[in-house]
Image (cartoon, rainbow, N blue to C red):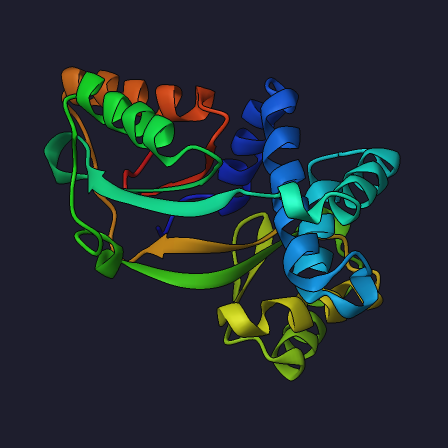
Amino acid sequence: MSGHSKFANIKHKKEKNDAAKGKIFTIIGREIAIAVKEGGPDPANNSKLRDVIAKAKSNNMPNDTIDRGIKKAAGDTNNVNYEQVTYEGYGPSGTAIIVKALTDNKNRTAANVRNAFTKGYGSIGTQGCVSYMFDEKGQILVAKDECGMEADDLMMLALDAGADDFSEEEDSYEILTAPESFSAVREALEQEGIPLANAEVTMLPQTYVTLSEESDLNNIRKIMDLLDEDDDVQEVFHNWDE
């Protein structure tokens, strides 16, 4: 995605989230519940929970809300019945879309996701039909104007902690890791006081699709808006070059 600002895209995504804080807090609350059920309520002994807490803080979730979510999940583990489900499909002009959801009712979620694709003239495919076009990576973005460390020093810190790749963008630094190395790299940066603009395990497209027809643009926006409105939908990955 050369020539594009990944940082600007992240800021745009966060602004959208700010407009729907209720939804993002619901999503993170479910992730906290699952992390606590799988690894316990102590972040010191639960790296998945530490990652979710970092995600919560980057989305401006108050500390007391995070603590309440952990305590509630710890006292209610038998009732945490969310399942992670993934849908893959196609949007306009063959754009690839992956939808990850956390749900307590798979039938409801499947119907809602299918409806979003249908209304945007897309289609749900079989598992694996588009995921081969993406690489699962830990992605950490650091805003240049908030980072007091020289680029070479930041790169060495990240690589020493286990990062796979480091690149310098116009307004940010991008650090990529294997999914299993993400927590260690993120924590190494945090321990050095590096402010992280964004840190998550994501699906990065290997190539991007440009849409120029107005009908295609309207349809993919319709799909994205409907998925964004669904509380069960956790994350949406696509190869549309916005």
